[in-house]
Image: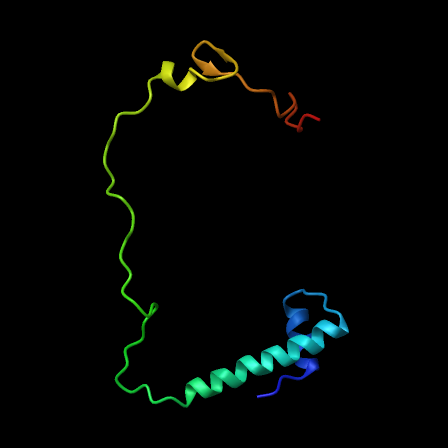
Length: 102
């Protein structure tokens, strides 16, 4: 299935993409090739084949969620460059009126 340059320009407009004439020509060819492959796949007899999201079974690779003791306040502040009254001290990033400090 051939995609025209006019169709590529229309899709680019909908996607708010600015394409050069060369990019339009290249994309027209690439999209046409992709649609040719899709047509080939549609010719396959897939009766009885269940739809899948993955070709292989996927297993969860995350570790079990276990409760562990957290850091004490002293341990958390141990490497802080600045601290005061049990809190981290960081530079101000917003002014008094809410504007970002420069």
